Length: 87
Image (cartoon, rainbow, N blue to C red; front, side, top):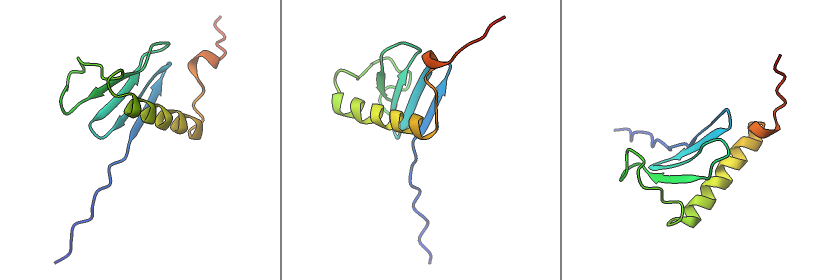
């Protein structure tokens, strides 16, 4: 009998109009445009009511590095650096 392939979870990253986030397993790191990073454990707090950024500084910093690395690799231009021409 063949063993089922192990599914290796991958992180999910996104950025939209300066809002950015990382989903890493049960953990979600999110920041609104020009706002501070917030950290949530979705397994224990599905509706994101308890920001754990201050209580989990090592995880917070690890995930910020993950997000910055993804953004650089994906050539994400920081929202504040975009030149907007509005007529």
